[in-house]
Each structure stands twice: as structure tokens, then as C-alpha cells.
Length: 486
Image (cartoon, rainbow, N blue to C red; front, side, top):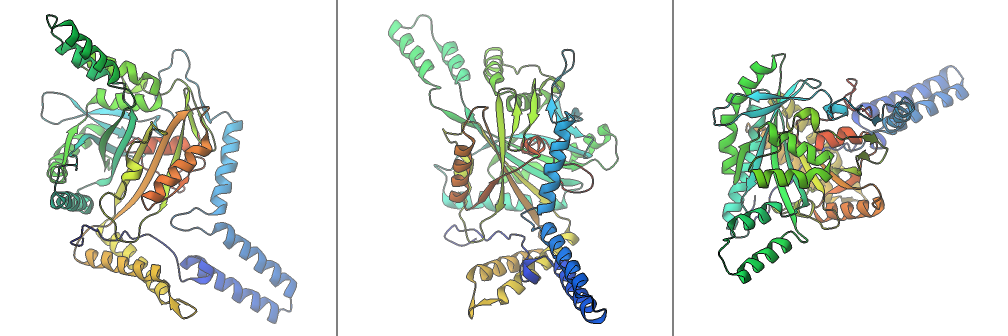
């Protein structure tokens, strides 16, 4: 960080400087294919066969070409075919029967809540995910506003947050951390109840009229924000009670780092977790939940098997749940130049055109050995790119990226951690909302935050579940974690 409050670069995984812009393995295969074509054509005098083999190999390389930030054409085709197949089988729709519970669908179908043995006057909960063998604790986070905070204090907060992320890989069994910020229209129920309770029946009528008018006008045109942080731990073939006990011991090591970053974390209980999941799947229930919380001074009693939607359907461009549709957007390019701590504010802050918006940032730490290997690979790739010239001129962007990777490499050598970051933005709108307008708005927010955002295709229910901050981690591979099936 510089003295002017501009923070260091973010490194971005790329593949440059190889054959036709392919990755290292694909470049090697392309060279081998080219050599085979030459051998077949010259030795066996079978040039037509060699050409056919060369074209087939080139087509295969083109279809399987992928970057760390973009999937291959073959993967996209496979997703589309699998989605159509599952739709024909009726597995992209969720319609619970009359006597069935409303367990969240898809990747959350097997998730359950277990008690977290933390000393206190209430029972706290952890989220057990048998499908991915993880246990997640969720904190409700209250952050300090920066309006009246000195810049030096903000710098200290940002540095402390960076240290917290850096040390995630040193916490036993820690898989990831998910920071969630969601905006929503605030009906002002709690404020109205507070004003009504504070009203003195013996006060003058004029004062009571002013209070009543203020209670009615309080929620008009207001957007509120909620923050939470989920920390995901590996189960490691332990039973859930044993795992919860071990995780409870780790919480003591997490709290000082969060508090030094200007955050006030509070562990969530069963009711709190069930409530925010219910709000996400059924936004129309938010008013009833607010009323129950405000009038009775307690949260609505919800079991986790009751928080899912009454109906849901997976679509190529969105996830329909009840009367709403949620569309997911992923950041695939991050800022590579210096940035201030407010760089993500355009994405995080409320927008009256998109009142229901959730931003989930997932931080996944690498183990020290794997981190060093990945940074070294990125450094070699950045060096190749920086050495290339166009008309005798070096590309300034490649030079900036090389400097950023060298900084990460020096930090790894000094024993610091290495964390990969992903950003998912989920926008929930009525089913009949203009989808193109939402795409334009999110694209503009991303550019204002030095991010490149794109709408995700397929797997929207899985991406929706990952963006909730329940410890669901999206993976691509043979384990079939990503799925359109509900």
C-alpha cells in the first residue's frame, strides 16, 4: 500500500505467451500434432490423411480451449445438452408434495443444521453439508461506517482484513470464507414498532400525530443492507458432533482478526440462519418475518426443512423460485492496477433499480506448497507475456501484471498466504422483469468497480446456493458437484 491510500495489485490467473494463446499442455499437444502431420505427410505419402488428422486435432484443441476465467466451448455444450436432458426427465423442476417439507432444493437438499458447542446464553448453529463434507459457521457482521473514520484507521482496517485472509490457510481444516452483502427494501417495521412503543398515551395529540406520520414515512424509498461472513471447514471423515466441537475451538482464533478489521462478528443461531435462507427463497415472506421479530422481540421459529421455496425451476438464464427469478453474474476479470479501498462500492451499495441484490465474495486459501507452485507458474507465464513485443513496443499491461505477480511471489517466499477470490452477484426480480435491463445495470456496476461481470449460463440453482453464504463451494470436475438437477 502506498502513502496515498492506493493498494497493491490483484493478480489474475492467465495463460499467455504460448502457442496460439493456448495453455501450456494444449500448446504441447498442438506442437505434437503439427509434428505428426509433417511425419505422416512426408514419410507415408498420405497427405490427405495427415490433413484430416491435423484438422481434427485443431478442432479438438479449439473446442477444449479454456482459460482460468472462461470455460471451454465443449464444456458449455455439455452443460447445454445435460440441461435439456434433465429438463426432459423433469429434474429441473421442484414441486414439493402437500405433505412434504420445503427443504431447499438442489445442492442444499442434504444440508442440515447442527448445534455448535460455544459457551453462551443461547444455542448457536453450524451448517453441515454432507455432499461436500464441510461444516460452516456463519457470523452476522456489523461494520463500522467510514464517514467519520480517519483514513489512517481505514488503512489499518483494510490491512487487518488482508492479514485475516492471508492467515486463513494456516487455520486447521479451513476451506474458505464467504463474505456476503445483500441489499433489500426495508419496510421499516422495526422502526414503526419502536415508535409506537415509545409513544406516551398522555402526550399531546399533535405530538402523537407527528410520531404517527414519521412512522408511516420512515420506510418510504429506503434500502437497507445486511452483512454476514461464513467460514467453511473440512469435515475430514469425522462425525458432525466431533467436527462441530473442533470448529468451536477454532472460532476463538478467528474473532481477534475480524475485530481488528473494524468488524463486529456475532455467531448465528438456528433461527437466524433459517430466516435469511427463507428470505432469499421467498422474498414475499420478509414482511411477516420482520413483524414477528419486531412485535414479539424474537425471531420466527423456522426449521431448516421449511425454508425452501414452494416451487422452483432451473432455467438457462435464471433460477425461478416462487414468484421471483434470480439471475447470477460472475466476475471474470479483476483490477490489475492500484486501487483504493472503495473500489467495490459500486457493486456492494444499494441500487433502487435492483432492490434485491446479493454479493458473495468467496476466498479460498491454498496450502503453502500449492500456493508457491501456482505463483511460480503464474510468474513464468507473466515473464513470457512481458517479453513479447508488438512492433517493437512492450505491452504496459503485461509489465503491470508481471510486477503484480512478482509482488505475490515475494510475499509467498516471506511466508504469507495465497488466496483465490471469486465474486458472485445475485439479483432477484419479479418473473416479468426486464432481463436485458438487469444485465446492463450489473455490467455498469462492474465497470465502475473495475470488474468485468458476465451472466452465468446454466447451473443457476447451484450458483444461487453458493451465493447465499452457506458454505456451498462450486467445483468443476468429475464429482458432478455442479448440476442443473433440483
